[in-house]
Image (cartoon, rainbow, N blue to C red; front, side, top):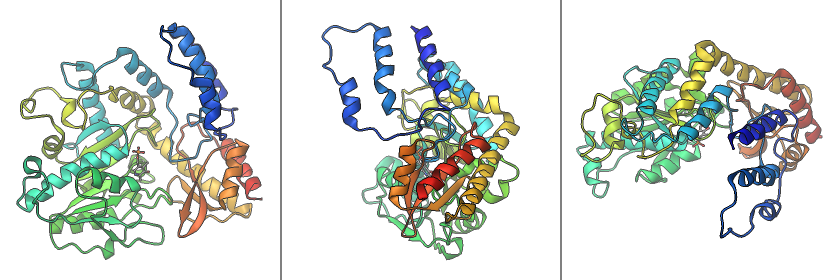
Amino acid sequence: MLDSVFRHTDAYLASLDDRPVGVPVAPEVLRSRLAGELPDVGVAPEQVIDELVEAVDPGLVASAGPRYFGFVTGQALPAARAADMLAAVWDQNAFSYVSSPAAAVVEEVAERWVLDVLGLPESASVGFVTGASMANATCLAAARNVVLRRLGWDAARDGLIGAPPLPVYAGAEAHATIFAALRLVGLGAGSATLVDVTPQGALDAEALVLDGPAIVCAQAGNVNTGAVDDLALLAEKCRAAGAWLHVDGAFGLWAAAAPSLRASVAGVELADSWATDAHKWLNVPYDSGLAIVANRVAHRAAMGLSAAYLTESEHRQNYDYTPEASRRARGFAVYAALRSLGRSGLAALVERCCAHARLFASLLGEGGATVLNDVVLNQVLVAAPPDAMARVQEDGTCWLGGTVWRGQSAMRISVSGYETTEDDVRRSAAAILRALG
Ligand SMILES: *Cc1c(COP(=O)(O)O)cnc(C)c1O
């Protein structure tokens, strides 16, 4: 059975360089291939898999390949992909130490390595969650409890009904998932006071006025421009006011791992919590996000299970750091990615993506396109009508998504893959220029 899976895997990976990246497909096409009646009698597993592989093919997006530039989607490093496949084969429940000592210790080691490469405090804790959305929610749950405690309220015990007002600030360009996370943790999507942003979409730290305990949602890496907030100034203001500084660094936090880019996130280590993705710039397969909290006790108090479980233990209990109990052993793939890259390989991956973004900007600019952002990380924003973007997707050389920036329709190029080459950038830039006409 697994032999056939490996054959399918090899064939798919070998096709990635040539297959159209993400050609639109109508759902009926896929339904007609997939949606027969549920059989009364089971079908042999080999047949199920062979026919699944055949049926889904037109609906697969080659985001594992080198010319997918949508949604800050990283590829999957070979070691990370393999570790993730093994996690499925081992079928470990990463819930607790006894349910999988291996998953507990791997996450403990991966935690240490993540903090190390990102230059965050050694004493911080890391929860292995589905993505930055859940990382934002996890961190903001800890923030909510700690800041309300400063205001004399025990939210973990008493909930939010009757709690004192809790001021929340976010940049006007904060990611949509920050507001979804605020809604999920009971603070309300509309509760945040929006702070003005700089022309590149960073929160204008000078404009932020704090007069007491609050939660400030900062950003390392605006999803359109890559702009990073002035984290050092924000941290200073938060410290003075007794406020909690949370950084959504879904992709941008990885700039901290590259010596040449570290200055762009200066002060990041002074925050109270950080959300980031391993499935973006670290090139780990989905789903893999990291919820990082400077105060381990606060992290555990917000996420750990009932008092019965919350006993001191000499072991890491993974359930202390994530909203879930039973779950996939996500740490294996993060561990494998970091070990296979090493410190220098990770820095090179991040730097190479940024260099490719700059090359994109210069090729597109020379070709007559208008680049709308300062290319500071891996994001390039190009003025384009929606139909030009549709033509790029239809052409299939590369895939990128659309956005609206300052009222102007634009295409967004995110270079996040370890295998993307200069040649991929040149081929893709040519396809984009053709589509722009
Ligand atoms: C991608 C992204 C998110 C959401 O991350 P998911 O992994 O999709 O949950 C949040 N913030 C920023 C800045 C992002 O780029």
